[in-house]
Amino acid sequence: MNTARRIIVALDFDTVDDAQAIVDRLGDAGQSYKVGLELLTVAGPAFVARLVGEGKDVFLDLKLFEIPTSVAGAVRAAGRLGATMVTVHAMGGSTIMEAAVRAAADFPQLHVIALTVVTSLADTDLAAIGLSATIEEQVTRLARLAQRAGCHGVVASPQDAASLRAELGPDMLIVTPGVTLQAGINGTTSEHARPAHPTAAIRAGATHIVIGRSLTRAPDPAAVLAHLEDELGKLRAHS
Ligand code: C5P
Image (cartoon, rainbow, N blue to C red):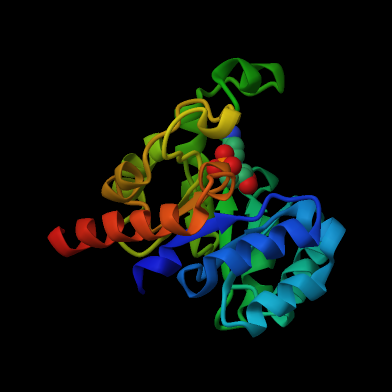
């Protein structure tokens, strides 16, 4: 896989025009995009279909947590749209993850990626919802469950990437948000608990990084992406 496809640009925008403007500015350098619930809700599936039509990889971040039939239906819809990744909450258990994996089997390009614990949560948040495990224990437990259910990968923070790579072996995809190029760029404050640089995430074993505001809100997003591709390319050349 080329380096560009490993860098997933999060299109966290509330208008199609703003999202399309970034896609246009990145041009051929932008190969992979994440469309989340905000943009999908305002833009609808047509925007996703257009990206796919332009040859882009689309990570449809649906964060599915539903009854198995509904999860399977949503995964099939994502597959028909041409998405390459779709997310399902591992917290929902094996049955919904297995339903998602079975539904994705008809779409060879589609990978089911399990969310473990969202990176903004702390141990106290788990206690508040009645879980006695630490974040670390819960992440490991859910990642194992996702692998046993047949998921193709997991979403993980940069801090968890190394231990999960050791835990899950070489084949699972590890998709890592919570990366930033520099804290507080353009006045955005990151709510990531502990942001890390993308190179650190890839070194730790991530196969993909998700980068949002520190790229999309930069004065010259194309220059930031080109620099990042260059850095990650060098890293892989030396590994
Ligand atoms: O912070 P940034 O704009 O780079 O976020 C990009 C993506 O990372 C978001 O779309 C969100 O899904 C994910 N994210 C996350 N945990 C956070 C913050 C963002 O998984 N604490």
